[in-house]
Image (cartoon, rainbow over all chains, first blue to last red; front, side, top):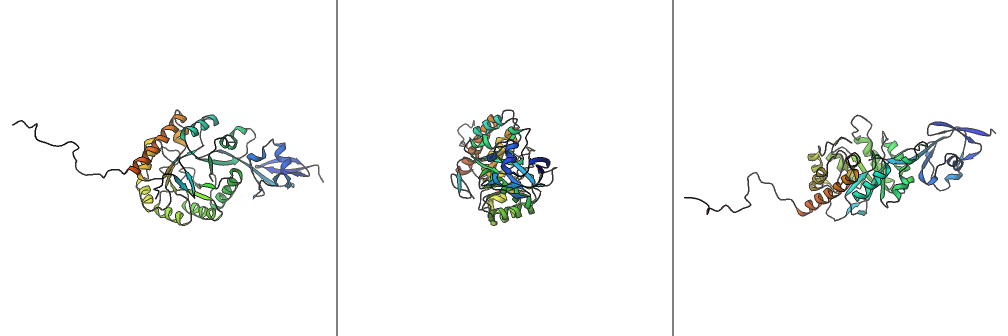
Length: 70
Length: 260
């Protein structure tokens, strides 16, 4: 198994340790987990147990936050 | 229809009838001060991809400190399926049951798509959301959205961000006359007097963003809108006098000054 894997984070290729979890990804991006909503391959990942969710090569991850809007 | 003293949306009660949007502010600090000055208890927010270069764009933490209720919108959605997904993500992140359904596929005029708005609203009511749809000022659609279980309808005053005011006034009146749920004018208002006019007409609340965010002094304008909404609502409750086509004297027309 490769040491790294390529995943797609917000539309951009990203290298992550393999094996890796969402928790690893958020930590590597310095993201506070409580401040974001996450989809993996179009599926919403609930906050509970999210950090332990295992990622695999090619996964498409969307990390979303609230910004200003009317 | 809304005779209570508090604004009731989906069983939740609010003292403030001014809902504020968080877009277009020059800084988060200015936005926070404006929200405080507005007295708003409901504030809309939008979902976007996390931007590593601009972590200060994230509004969740600063807004959480205000003790207000977030209303995530579905802006960016081009159809009902995308709006439902945006709503689910918004609920996951905010913990709020509210959603502003906002589907406007044409960036030129940002007019809401009535069909997709209806489909998304119906689906989100079934998912347990308190649904506030941004909609064209169409009385037939408003009734359909009410029947679908929406907590309010939010007809536009004029196109988003234009400041053309209550150009849909006659349609909004028809919506109010028929509605069993609160009617909230959303989009297009520029001045507090327009907000007051909407409230005098019988709206239950107004949603204002650009008019505050793009004002010379957003915080002062937020305060002005707050007063206008209260004045307009109080006037509606007080009962406006009937109009007359002929003058009706307020002073007695006696003849004692006549020089003969």
